[in-house]
Each structure stands twice: as structure tokens, then as C-alpha cells.
Length: 269
Image (cartoon, rainbow, N blue to C red; front, top):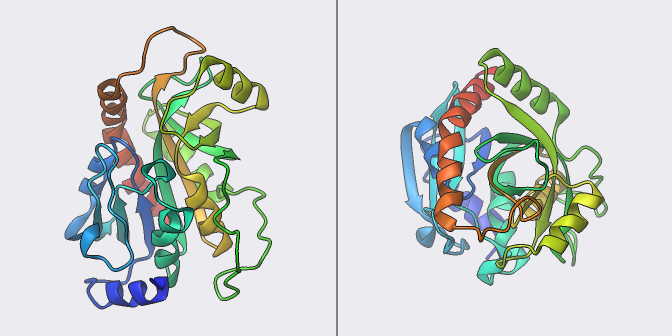
């Protein structure tokens, strides 16, 4: 399926022209509640979209307004561990680019490799390490979307990060910063793997986001990456991770994240 066809198909149905894109991660579907005048469509009805099978990913395309901006939100994403190709995983981001969206906010749930980044804490991504074994830009380049060899220096827009941190400080919300390493999954990481990632300089580990960010930067979008720490990695304990605990910690941070995202949208030009 051609992402341009899908973009036109969506454009013909949307109530307004979207300016900002948001992708919600595990346990963060409530971020859609910041949108007013909502319009929704299940992914299964959108040409070219896969079906989201990950727990707590609603699988809906949502349009609405927040902070005076027109927003297109992906309530749930696609993961490589679901068996989808990297082209399927990033298809919605290319559709967003064809819709004219120039700012993308990606959120995810992650495990902490740093004692300072605690469960239920919001963390801004300052950089990432791609350990997923794939790059979504392999193959023929679409020169109409971006150049063959895009720079990933500062993949997460410094201006957006500064705005977000200032908003958090003004509202008394604790926000950390860190480097995110992306892995394929779906098995969680061993202690030895976590020690290796921490030795590389990673602070967080998760199974998403990086392919979307690479494609967004390829198309020239400004990207803000936000992670919610859902658990400490096994560097700090010997307990098995429970999915209900992961989703519970993500939900704890969701209300603060709603406040910060609404405030950030208001400040965007």
C-alpha cells in the first residue's frame, strides 16, 4: 500500500488539517483524552495500517484539538516483535509526513538502567541506541520524503526538549533525561544484557520508538521523545517483571504527561 494513497484517504475524512502527530506507548492510551472534538477510526479500517496486537494498545487513529493545535494521535503502535516488517511499523509515520505534519511526539514505556530514573517517572529522550537489528531506511530511498543519508545528530529536537523541561519545572513535575536503547523483544532483557547497555551509556531500554524516530527525521520532522519508566531493570533486583505492574506505573505518569503535553502544544507556534 502506498502511504501517499493512505494519507489522501485519511485527509478526505479528517475534520481538520493536523499539525502535530503523537504516538502513544504501552499504558499511555489515556493521552488521547487531552483531545477535544475527537474523531476516531480503528486501524483495521485504514488502508495499509496493520493491526495493533500489543496489550493496552487500542489500535485507533484519533484526531482532535489540544492547546489550540490540530493533532493526529496514534492510540497504539506497531512493533517488530508482533511479527510486522519494519516497513509496516513505520508506515503511519510516513503517512503523517504526507499529511504535512512537521512535529512528532513519540511516547513509550521503558525499563530503567539507572537507579536515578525511578518507576512511574517521566523521562525525556536525549539520544538513542539502535540495537533492534534493522533500519527502516534500508532499500530504495524516496527522495521526495528525504535524502539518502539523513543526519541523526540531535534526533530529539533541543528546542522542544527545553520547552518541555521548563513546563515541568514550572508545574513542579519531576522529569528526567536519558539515552534510550531499542531492542527487538518480545523477551525482556537478561541482567548481562542490561549491564552491557548501561556500559554503553544507555539509561532506558525498550522495544519501540527508534524506527519511527529515524523515519520522522528522514522526512524532516522535529521529534520529541518521552519515556515513562515502568520498572527497574534486573540490574537492581532479582524479581520477574509483571506486565500489570508495567502498565500500572505507566498509568501513574499519564496524568502528569497529559498536563505537560497540553502545555507544550499551547507553546508551539
